[in-house]
Length: 122
Image (tube, rainbow, N blue to C red; front, side, top):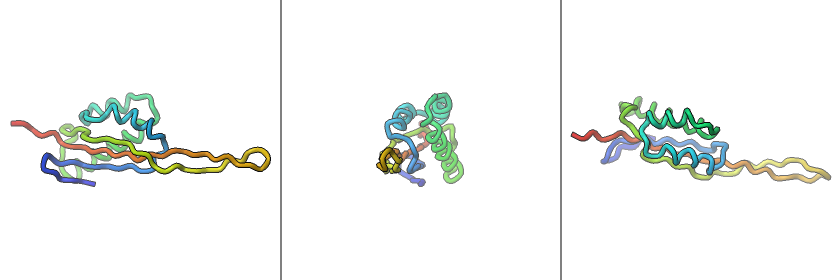
């Protein structure tokens, strides 16, 4: 989703039903919020967590849609808003002894990233 606002142009990108805990995603997102695009890429590529890969793909997607749809330069953009919200649980049943079953609940999350261009001061 692309939004034009008075303070500058911004690009919103959503990823839904990512199979990871919200807390694991928030640990990564807190590190990149408010940073420039190039600095964000360096941070995400060097982080040793599995949760950084889907967030890295999302930042790449936001930059690609900003440059293709709005003509923004990737070097002049920064992460203005990044958040991770809880999604539904994927529920499965695992067979156990004596014909019983055990519920397995896998958490999912929704990730939102907003990419804005820096205003040039004259």
